[in-house]
Image (cartoon, one colour):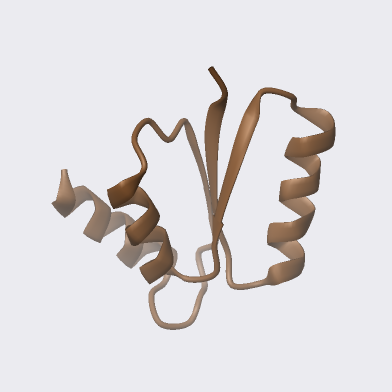
Length: 75
């Protein structure tokens, strides 16, 4: 079973670079990505067993700290 990584970053180049890194260097990972905290929360709520989250600290709309705080309230 593939491990799941969730990449949350507003910079598309960062998301694409990390996606390629996982695809080419780390086999066995399924990559999900979100461009802001709100999309990240949606993916958290509908995806079971996320193994790794790569989260940008500074994003518009919802920063990384707020996302983590909201995620902790969900559990």
